[in-house]
Image 1: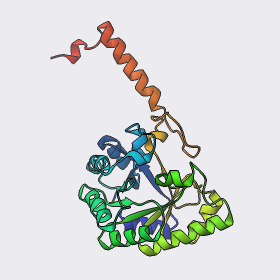
Image 2: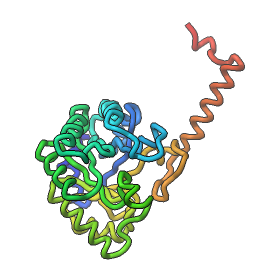
Image 3: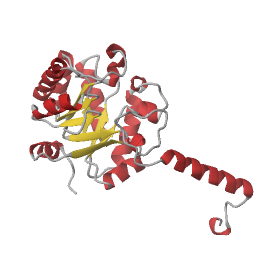
Image 4: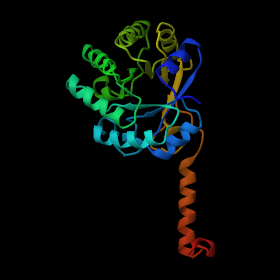
Length: 265
């Protein structure tokens, strides 16, 4: 399998071929996702909750994202690696934004994800792209703007709201993004937006008509159990698998069954 690049992603869009996106936060998981043929591996700021135990994504910082980016990049050969830039890492000024995003590229990422829309965000995207840094946009529900949005609310529910998201998406497209995540957008609205863009869209709870789907790996593995989004499908039950393994180990140690004669020097 050839390395997935921005050109690969655009070809998927042009040929109407679906592609896949999953999050990873460590070397071994990234390696397995890559072997499974996942097209884009996202070091999502969702790691704030599923890996670090924070209450929201806004709590994670650049230093932490840098550690996880380096680890994930080490495990990937073919997938495109994208780092989710954390809250306030690109909001203060453009030089700081370029520096923070550029450092993720130096650590092994192939691009970055930037949330939201504003004249400033558009300027940041243009500067990043001009600097050789591929950018994935993110519209609809944007977790880093949780406080200003007033909670976890579906976006684009009316024709007028969908038109506004499309207008924003076209501006992101013009600024140079290679793809756009649509989060918690009604399926019909996401379909309309997708059909009117040249760059591919990635559904995060935005239905089946986007060009790609993204989920948090800990959700599909059944590892993170604090809560489960409506749009996440659980493919396994790693929580109970881990519990069972740990309980068995605990019992074997206390009963003297571990280690056996074959497990000692």
